[in-house]
Structure formats: structure tokens, C-alpha cells
Image (cartoon, rainbow, N blue to C red):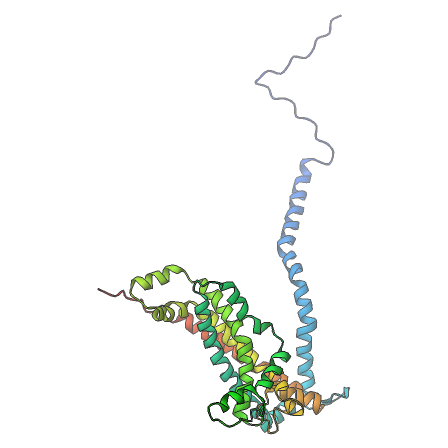
Length: 345
């Protein structure tokens, strides 16, 4: 007896759907999609925080905690020999600090040293960067050379300049003697001492700021210089109307950076004093800075509470400088610039 085989499906009839394997039914698709969505949200929401978490952990351990602990110590009378023994004083350390003539003398010296070192330093750095911005032979060598003083340690630089400004056998007094000027006692007089210390700061930081200015100058489009040259602007006019406005943000940044460095000035005056006078900033405190006063109170007088109060006073000064910098940056960005009119022939 012959058996009949089923007829093949015609073109108008669909093929039968294959059987789905277990676990791959339609009911599992929404759960898989929800799981992928959850993983995607976790990837976008938590992974970036995991990458930056090490920074915040290190900052909390070595930055935030010492800052808060210093403030806590500033509210007590604490001696260096017995840090576990504290006597609550509240804000007495701060009020006594503001009534102390040595604090205001140190603040004044810090300000004057900052001015006579920052202003010439930034002006020299601006001019040096302007020269390095031209196409010169061996420009790479000169750019590395100007950074060499920054790579020199504070101790080595201060010792060399201390010998240069030595009263009896220093090269500076020898050079002044050629013009009939008597030897200057650089260490014992206020303004000569501050001038010598500022010279060390200028020598170390001018090249660093010059490279910052140079990097900002190279980001200025050359079209601006070409347009200024077509308008008939000289080199000086191009520098004043194109270069300086183009790097104004960098100039403000270096001013703030130099202010922070001047507030924390410590190594140069300490080594310049050559002994016990370095801690006190000279016999009459003529060049004692806030950093030296902090060191004297904490590690010479063993008054860690007063030293912590000085540290927080320095922190508040730097915070005020930061606020002023932000205000100045906003005012500068909102100031409308008058369009430059082309010169008519």
C-alpha cells in the first residue's frame, strides 16, 4: 500500500515557525532589556565617580583633614611638646594675633616682598615670552634655558645669592664699588634685604611664567596679527592691542599664582638670614614673612595654637585673593571691547 507524502508548501503559504529553545521565550525579553538598561544607568552614573574617587580620598586624607585639624588646634592653647594636652581658647588666638605687631609687620613684609618680586617678574616674563614667540634659531634651546632656574632648588639658589649679596666680599658690592658706592649691608637693612630676597624670587620664577605666556601667545590666531599689520599697526601696537588682550586670562592666572607664592614665601628669607636671624627675619624682623612667623611660633616658641591661627590667616588671605581674581575675571570678560577701525590712506 502506497503512502502519501505531504505536499510542499506553496509560495503563498508561510513556513511553520521553528520551535524556540527553552529559556528564550518572548516573556524573557523585557527582563533582559531592563537588566541592560540598569547596567547602562549604573555605567553612566557610578563609574565616573569610581574613577575620581581616589583623588577625593587622597585629598580628604592629606588635604581636608589637616585643614580642619589645624582649625581645631587654632581654637586651643597647644604646645609642641604636649600635643595631646589642649586648653580651649575659642577665638582668643585670632584676636591676640590681630593685636600683635609682629603679625602686621610680617603681613606688611609679605605684601612688599610680593609686590617688588611679582611686578618686575611678570613684566620681564611677558617681554621674554614675546621675544621667544618669534622664529629664532635655537628657539628650543632658549625655551629650555629659561626654565633652568625654576628647576634649581631653593636652597642652592638662596645660598648662591646670599654669597653674591655678602657685605664684605660679595660680587654685588664689588660691582657697586666700581661706581664709588660704599658696601651695602644687605642683610641688616630692611629695603636692601627685601630687594635681595625678591631678586632670588625673580630669578627662579621669571622663566616659568615666560613659558606660560609663550604657550598662551602661540594659541592666538595669526590672522589677528596679519589684520593688524594690514591696518598699519607697528610691532608695539600689535603687542599692546592683540597679544596682551589675547593672553589676559593667563596674565590673571600668573598674578594669582605669584600672589600665592608670595604669601607662602619661606625658604628664600630663611636661608638668606644665615642662622638664627633667618627664622626671625633679621634682627629687627625687617624681612620676616608670614611663613617665617608661623615657623617661629610653632617650632621655636612651641605655640602650635598660635601657629595654626597664622596658618588659617594665610588661608583666608589666599581665599580673598581667589575671590578677587574671580570678580576681576568676570569684569574683564563683560567689558565691551571697542572695535578697531582701519586706517585710511
